[in-house]
Length: 113
Length: 115
Image (cartoon, rainbow over all chains, first blue to last red):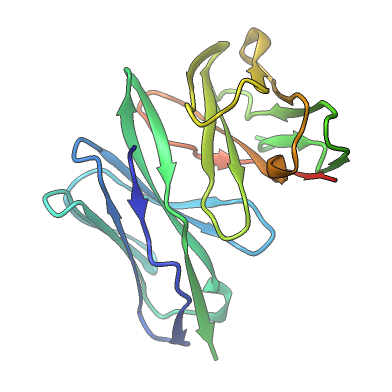
């Protein structure tokens, strides 16, 4: 059973702060990693993907990957109240020649003014 | 690009009845995924298609669940003899593969309530 672990939170940060969201995964062979944002009552929205060790930046978002530690994180700089949502980590793992996206349970982020 | 469409948005059914959901993916996307999500949990993988071929089905999925994607376009997910435990949001997602990009675009989902 391939597992993706996230702290369910909530993580509460003040407006303007850096929010740090973490995710660990069990399948050492996983190659692709994704972060989704899900607002309450809405469906997930892909916001970041990362495939190589290191950092990948897109606007206020930075994804960090450490395959040796089987760890992926998402940093949100200058957090805004509109960033309040659940952030889902997903890992693409190989299964019988196919690639299956497996999701964590998500971390709830609250950005307070 | 009109996005991923799912129909219906909501479905209330009595226990023991059969239900069918439809998903229309983004037209150029060859991969189509079905997920189920309950409150406080992440999406749980059910099955996926590469064009019209169903390549993987979750071992957690009972035989009451079946999915099709005729002609590699829209897909249907049928649940037979529904149970209260089937109550959830059923999400469809699509992507263009290769390269493996995961579930790129989700539809709005179908919320199933079994009473």
